[in-house]
Length: 408
Image 1 (spheres, helix red, strand yellow):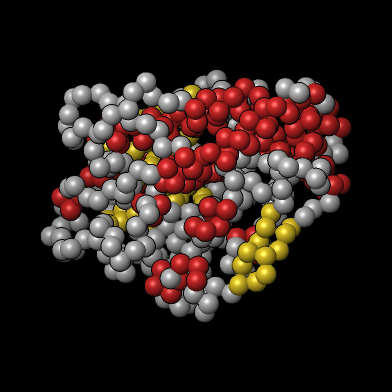
Image 2 (tube, helix red, strand yellow):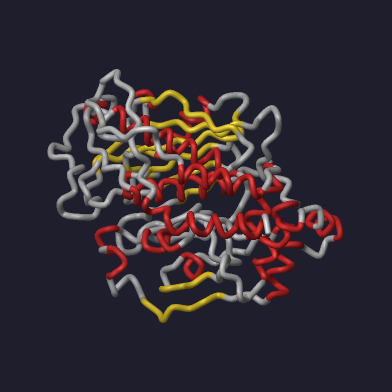
């Protein structure tokens, strides 16, 4: 059986030359932090005039529908509204789905050449993971606290769970009881460049694999603690084993101040007495749960779970499943799937496309009955915090337009 393991979502060996990066990165592959200085460093970031990658109508139509009579017949089973929406993929004047734009030579599509995956290739991939009645639940395991108080952490988990339930409409999403870092028995360190705590991604994957429930389609870990895949690497946003259906992803670097000199997560006394002394994680720093952090978290979580379904990086249109080489590029890609990737996910799950969009709209519009300030940690008082959805405003308008096309 072929094993598929992907290291992704950021990071690279330290040093000017370093070790060759893995051949199957899942998402990001950043330059060393001390050299990058974000995307403004001209030495490592060669800028080019923005380019637009525009495929022909014939190419996009074939990628979406296929020339295989069986798959064409399957496409024709979509109702008129569904076909009208997905046919937007090859309408050059479409206001819903646009081409991929490349802003620099460091962008993913230019720096990581990959063979594109059309619908037929996805459909005929015998190795891809498929949900079934016996394995139909997406489990999410939080590692360490996700917010500065218990209430904030619980609300953030609830928001992520609701978003995944809408995005992967038709599947069940369950959050497992949070676990501490010490429960995973993972290795950890203090990053010598950023002075922040990091936990070993590979050890977390091994922990999740052992904990994966029998009815799980997949289990993904999320954490606010930075990750590293091996000692020679600076950091990694996430790592996954597609064969085992497990993944771990960190949102630590999505906070607004991670790269600033004012970052509060730096460890002031990095020395520790033992590799089994996890007391260093007591009351570790959590970034504020802002609308942008929630937006980035939803985007990363659904992109990575999409990989576990067998969706490769999209090279057809602007799409959530585009690869991303740095945070600025990640922020550019949309929350939505292009029609080609939407058809892949619909094929895997079997949802109604319009009902899925309506579920996403409900998630955005789901205002709590009352808003209240967070209560102190360990408080037993239940509080509903207002969901910070300001960053989703433009996408909400886009979803409404899609529903209008579907119900025209």
